[in-house]
Amino acid sequence: MLLFGHLGITFAATQTFEKVVLSQGKKKFTELIDYRLVLLGSLLPDIIDKPLGGLVFKATLGNGRIYAHTLIFLLLLVGTGIFFWVKDKRPGVLALAGGSFFHHILDGMWRFPGTYLWPLYGWSFPKGDPEGWFWQWVESLLTDPWVYVSEIVGGIILLYFLGKLAYQKQIRTFMATGKIEPQRI
Image 1 (cartoon, rainbow, N blue to C red):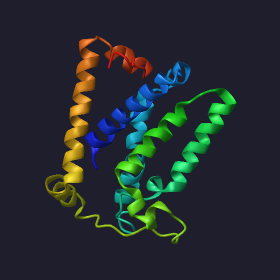
Image 2 (cartoon, rainbow, N blue to C red):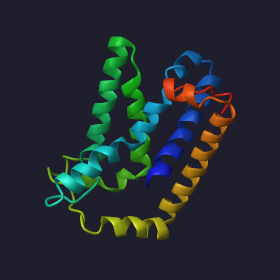
Image 3 (tube, helix red, strand yellow):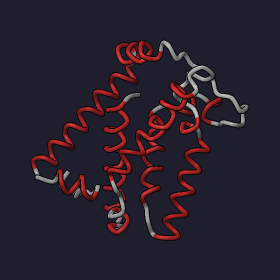
Image 4 (cartoon, rainbow, N blue to C red):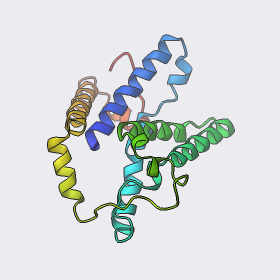
């Protein structure tokens, strides 16, 4: 999956989660959600792994799904988030972890146990094709319904969200706080 799928679908899932929690009368919890961090978290594994595996370790790995696409990375992020929540009541890292959790789901990481359960299957990662990544990306975008449908759906969700924010003159508020009024979007 690519940019729009990760961002849009993660946003919609977080909105749904927020509405469910609100319906249970837990407004205080939903006030902690910073959508900027959730959206950053939805891209975080790729932000870390694509340059690291595809550029820095190009010769040895050539793989854009390495450390940040592992379960241990996600668990460390959640653990760090819980630490900061308990210590300082700061939920930011938990928002990043939530976004990264959706990234792992949308990438279907359970289908790649050599990466997802690293280092249980050994210390190395599967070797990729660093020279052919662009054409693999184009091919999957054009032929794999999981990729192109996710990108279209995610793009529509993002356009709808941005359109609503613009219509309600809430873009600056969102950019400054990461908050949205759930009943308004």
